Image 1 (cartoon, rainbow, N blue to C red):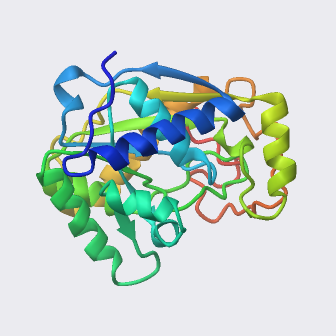
Image 2: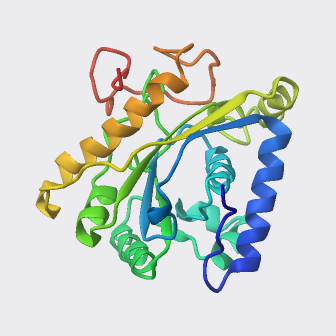
Length: 259
């Protein structure tokens, strides 16, 4: 597979971020990447839509994307950009800042649209947060990803991942040393699968709810084989992660929506 491309104007920062992500991931887990992105889509514009399982999964996804020849710009919560070192790298590499729970979210979608218009790859989390579903299955998504895809006509590739929730606790820094130490000792398998493009044909921006469900369903479907040994709930319990079925895609079944 080809190596990762570098976002225009930020190649040094991006290469540094990719190297750091790959080293960090290799030190705490065993990365297993499956699936592929068609060569014609790798150069962008392209949306990668992934499930969000924990604070460490952006690094895992960056490392996995590098394996398949992609260097996506990530739509990340504003708090990440305020971090002393990581925030500087995020800004330099041209990632997209998302101000959650504010009117500025619309500005974030516009910024992501501009990145796509420039021909880049953008990684998004349709759920809009780390999942709180009891089974850690993908929750009902927010419509931002779908609206972005329908507005721009850019293809969407679902990315299913499993295992990154064992690297850092949801409530970091609570239980940080204990959880990280466990990961270093056990080196959990970190599985990432790149699926086939989601079929959004025949939909317009007014069909954003339907498009959102198609995207999340594709992620959930690809997630099933990744967590075959944990089909209902995670074997490892993060005691800092609150649990809520309020946004579960199938009420009453523990959120097992990809089966």
